Length: 120
View 1: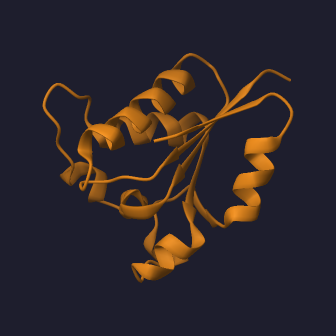
View 2: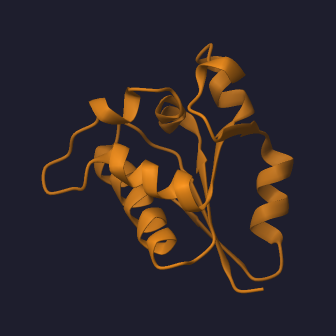
């Protein structure tokens, strides 16, 4: 098994450059065939909700919705259990293909053999 990239996005519209970097790195890796797991935590949890990524704009950055689509089509996207609960986002509120999971699952993925974890 090859290396897996586990990316944790901790920022959303509150820190747009950091947010865009997380999505860009994850999507670039996914497009290159690297197994990717993107975690949406903190303010980035909003991007698990349909239509939210389309509202994000950052000059000279690829559209967040496009990046998210690449990751969803080839990898795994997970929204943090506590983060979505704090925002009153439930399982029926997230995009198809987005799972909701907690810290234990993140640790399992990040510590797996061959995994490389990045936090933005």
